[in-house]
Length: 445
Figure (cartoon, rainbow, N blue to C red):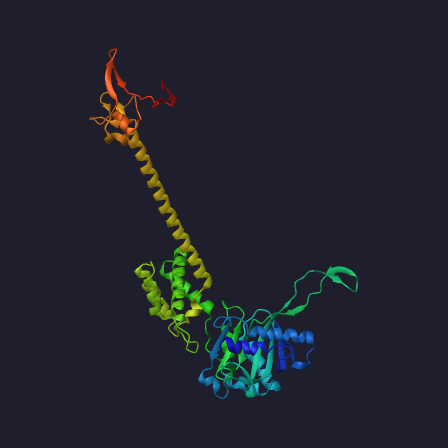
C-alpha cells in the first residue's frame, strides 16, 4: 500500500460515505479476562458513539509508512488450511456474523498481545465498491471491484484522571466520578492490504502507535508474519552501530551520526530525479554506507567497522533509504557545520585585523624612528625604527635615549649638531610657517 491507497480508504470514513456493515468487539481486563463482548450493525449505532468509532478506525490508517504503518506478507504456510491468513480470510467472508470465528479471533489477539492494562478489541467489516477511474484520475460511473476487508483496532482502556467536578444532583462541587475511557488505538491492522486500488490477500497492513516499541508479538503471533522493524528502530540501530565503532563517546558518535545523516540526505536528493514513482524504493546497501563514510573525516578503522556492522545488522534486507533519514539529525548537523564555519571565518577576520593593526603600528614606529637622535651618534638609522625608545648596543645591553624627535622626513636632513657654550646641541631650523611642540607644549617663537 502507498500513501494514495491509504488516503483513499481514510477519506471514506465519514458519516455520509462510510460503508462499514458491522462492528464487533471484546473488552479485556489486565488479567486477560473477557469482560464484555459487543456486536451490532454499524449504521444503527447512535451518532455520538458513531463518530467516536470512526475516529478510532481512522487512526489505524494514520501515521508514516514504514514507521507507524508496516505492510507484512504472509508466508506460504499461513495461506494453507489452518494458517492465520486462511483464518482471517474466512472471518472476512463471514462479515463478522460467525460467533465461532469471532471467539477464535479474540483468543488469538489475547494470547499474542502484550499489554499491561485493560484494552478493547474492535473489529470493523467493510465492503467498498471501487469505482473505476480514468488515466487522468476522473471517476467513472462504473464499478471495478468490491474490496471487502477487516479493520482491527486494539485500544487501551484506562480510568479517567481524578479531579474536582460539579455534581449537578447535589448542586455542589466534589470528587469527580472516574470512568473507564477508551483511548486511541495502540495497535491494529487492515486485512487484506489495499494495493493499487485492489485487494491483496497475501499482505496485511499493520498499525503501531509507538514506532520505537512496535508490537512485534502481534505481527508474528497473531498474524503469522515475520516482524519488520520500523524506520525509527532502523535509525536507532544505525546510531548504535556508530556509537560502538567510535568507542562509545557520545559527542563524537553524535557528530559521526550527523555526518552520515547528511550523506544519506544528499544521496536521496541526488537520486530523487532519477527515481520513477512506479519503481521500487531505493534501498541502502553496506557499499552505499562505505561510500558515504569515505566522504567523512571518520578514521578508516572506525569507518570500516561501521560498514561491516551495518552489513551484519541488515543482512536479511537492506533498509529503504528514506526510512533511515532523520530530518532532525540532518538539521542539527547542518546547524553545527554552519556554526563551525562561522567560528573559522571569525578567526580569519580576527587574524587579518591583528595583522592590519601590527602593520599600522610598525609603520608609525618607522616614522618615529626617522627622527630618533642618540646621545652619542646624533640621528638614528631607520634600521632601529622598530625599537622605539630603546635598542641594543654592540655588547647586547639595553641603550636608552634622553631625546626622541619625531619630524617630517624632509625635515630630518636639516637637523645639525653643534657645540654651544661647551655643550653639544641639536639645531633644528624652523621656517616662518613651521611650528614645534615638546611633550605636547607649543614652543614655537
